Image 1 (cartoon, rainbow, N blue to C red):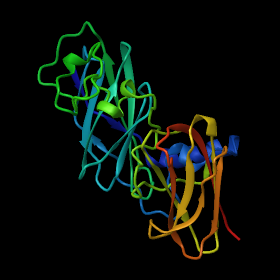
Image 2 (image 1 turned 90 degrees about the vertical axis):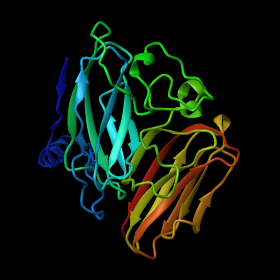
Image 3 (image 1 turned 30 degrees about the horizontal axis):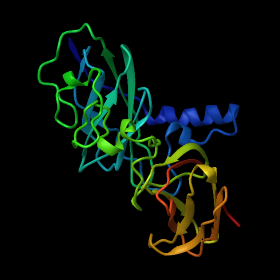
Image 4 (image 1 turned 60 degrees about the horizontal axis):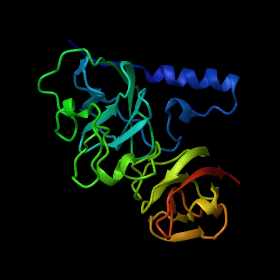
Length: 292
């Protein structure tokens, strides 16, 4: 068994990547390589990772580290992208590894403004069921990962039984809705979202989704929510700079919702997606911010 240190990628490569990709594909945006809104603050530092044991005989990799000036951590390279909130400057996230093999995990941080970190930490972890146990390892919930293999989530014991980072009703085993990549975004502290079209989003039952939208005075915000009403009624509203005043809303009982507003002040507005009946549904969000 060895311990690996993560290796950073560079912000300069991301900037070069935007130029090269945009030259080939006009639909590529800065978001595709992790560059935040133009009017946002500076990017947070690249997150740091604690040493990671590899290989491990457990179907979970627990990543711990520090992310100063960041609100959330994004991990890609596992079976699905994962997000966790930074507490203070520290974070912990359990990455499921369902099948044996080597997983290359890329860790990026994101600020309150929605700006991604200057670089990405990369670490390789191997899940080898035949490798020897690793003494002292624990998941983010403090449990031994030894019990993760073949474990099933118990939905009412406040524990992460299957070591996928989700507890009880938040685990897909306990309900039919899977959070999307922007979670956690259940309150008005959610980071900004760049203009664009975002597919494959989900509103889970009893939940709300928020998105920050930056606009200058005179800009027009147009947001469109596409979904099937037959699968669950969801609504859309736009809130002002105080995060509470509703300046436009769309609450029909048919497919799709639309809001629009011409900003009188520069700043960050908030979109809210919710269901008055607590329904769950999948949706696509289209966001446009245009200048006069």
